[in-house]
Amino acid sequence: MLCLTSFLYLKAVWNEEKENTFGIERLFKLITPIIICRCNLEDSTFAIILISYLLLETLLYLLDVIFLSDIYSPPISRKRSYLMLVINYIEVCLGFAVLYKATGGVSELVSNFAAIYFSFITATTIGYGHMALTE
Image (cartoon, rainbow, N blue to C red; front, side, top):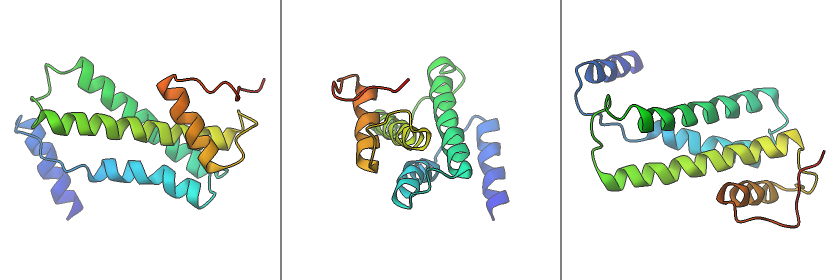
């Protein structure tokens, strides 16, 4: 069943038909860092590799959408595009929160909430003042 769905998707892209995905993979990418933090799996090598892969895939996808927009078909809806942009932003922030917690680069990150806080504040460039990277 999955092979047939993948084949139909590739056929639609090949024939330049409109893409009708519902973001199931985005939902997976959004909840994976939450599950890893919730189960305290951030020290697992598999978790670090998985999060790194998901982050790389998201960033390459965004670069494709930006720089290859003449190849892609126009978006289905502007509202959907904005929503997906926000979801991608949250994915990246949660992914980096897992990596910050896993690598121990910031000594003050004692909880998952602190790692998520640090990641979002760093990404929005608000500034945190009381936390700094360790050398």
